[in-house]
Image 1 (cartoon, rainbow, N blue to C red):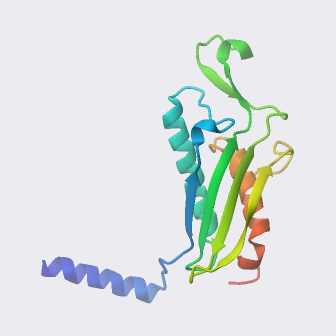
Image 2 (cartoon, one colour; image 1 turned 135 degrees about the horizontal axis):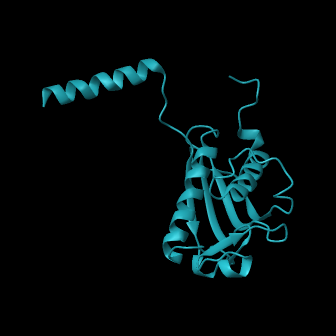
Length: 177
């Protein structure tokens, strides 16, 4: 027991000396009535599993973005609709000799997300908030720094652009270190 306590104390000291900070902005996302969303449809897995994986992926990505916000801030989002880029079609409809479904991405099937948000400071005071009807009509024409294999790359690109524009005043400047 003494060795465990000593190890934990040593780890805490080392983390304190190295300047690592564990405090960061929190992200809380509420998915309101997701079964009514326009399109969170899977190509080849259960609808519930796909929805859970999709929401977890967006949550993780928003947490990554929020790391740039000041410590102690909290971003609360209430998502009321999601429409992923593309549409799910049976493989045979798109020329595949396969019983599998595929998500076909076309310019007209743009990613969309509808939500309201609040950005709170460390004291719980609201700094920003509004309803957002986010859509990216040029999602295939813009530079997307995410890999082609990245899941939800169009949606993440759309969210990153929104986040950086909406919270620019709270984000570190390029010349800040």
